Image (cartoon, rainbow over the protein chains, first blue to last red):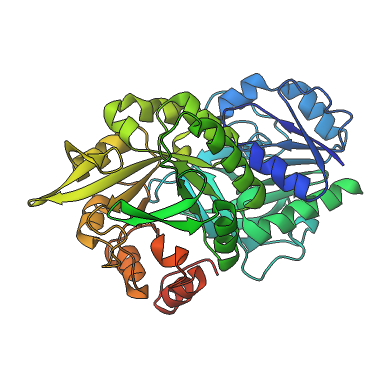
Length: 197
Length: 240
């Protein structure tokens, strides 16, 4: 399975590639979006800031490809790009989901850096086979504020926020599955399985 | 780490070999470690190349977060480590020599990537920041330095008591509590872990967000799982 990963920031894209390779997928990294139409799945990773990502990505083309049914996983910032905008910046997101991206409240340490539990709110193929109380790893200052049938799971950190969304062919996690041990591995496997269908 | 091996000493001296970093990393992951910290103290020209290979190997084998520090002096050092699969970089001496490095790192990579390591030694009635692997004094007082680097953009602090390092006499809870009450970023306790109670003291009494131990785990005196079971039984929420 060919998986195209978008590169729009400075940082660790190595771990997600290593995690995908472990599952037998063939990841490739692109800045311009070349190869995304031929890929079996897309990943918008969680590295960088909202504006930097939205301004450097071919947003129109990505929206079209996702709308046409390409299986896509947004991780952290990648999930936030599914929305129209963010308190982190001024750029326009992909506007694929209703809602907006907000900063974590001042009552907690920001960024959230560490493990947190995940509450499954709704049945979905991405959360099948998880532990009863799954733990996932976060590095985030912002979270999606959204309400709808696409909210599959939530976490609590100063506020209860959606941390896993699923809508038709696209999925997003506010946490980092590639850093979330066995739980993260199951979620990535579930995504690749769903993308194969 | 030194020369590609894990080493550990007492009060930063008398280093003993403790094994292969990748093997140890896997063992700790399987025992339930939440995060690993690699501090490379190799001082040689080949360091950059060997570090890149090592970080990649660790990243390929590890699905939990890890931090790499030791000799990170420039933006390109940090980029090398982060692009090879590390989640965070820890800076120490370079931040003391040029505090703007902390700001530049956090602007480019995000503050969540930037750990400032502070080596503290008791001097009279106050704690002084040490540099160059705790071989030099800096004249900086620990709490004011901690606040300063928080303002500069540090996302996390790794506070090591040089006096307690490797002694198993317990974390310096006075030092740690003074830092956690002064900053609003996560603080990792380091230096002195020797018993299960010590972990509880760091997390509950000194209000640290994480506790680091090296000797104890390297020499199999305790496992990560034993520490977590104890903490859980004592009311600290931990990932099983």
